[in-house]
Length: 225
Ligand SMILES: [Zn+2]
Image (tube, rainbow, N blue to C red; front, side):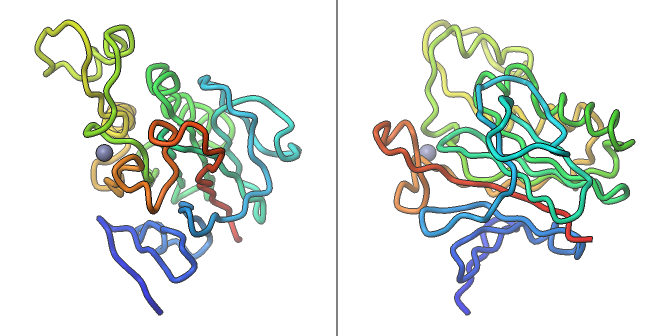
């Protein structure tokens, strides 16, 4: 079997990346898609770049609008679609609850990953200390140049930025990582594949590189037991 390891993520022969740390939890199954293959998801949302988090219980596929799904129901896979935006999969190692998050710049500016952690706490009693997080392929700082209005939304997240007018490169994955850290997720429990969709257009879909291409990467997770 051909397999390649990238920053704690394994690309298996089926063309799907999996976070090695998640694989320790035999009660879950997850994957980050590539151009070669996508994992399957029973429930996805009509994504609107919001900070809306929905419990997938009782939902059918694409029934609702929102940008993050949570569940603790076995055999219900939940997923998000991305092409440059940040896909984040979460698992609660104690309560066996899971989440799939779509964080573009708007969702990241609204801290959708923190909203997801809050809803997991409300619905399942999830504590951030029990969370494992996997950040999948997305556009990275190297390729993500934005205008001043967008950059200004991230000044609080990146206090080390020196004052600077005009365009700026933003690291959306790092913004989400910092939001999870400040919510109490342990630094050792956050895994980032550190792969750029725009740089690796042969492996992934990138909206910036190919705005006409309707291809999307699916990132999905399910609880098996
Ligand atoms: Zn890049």
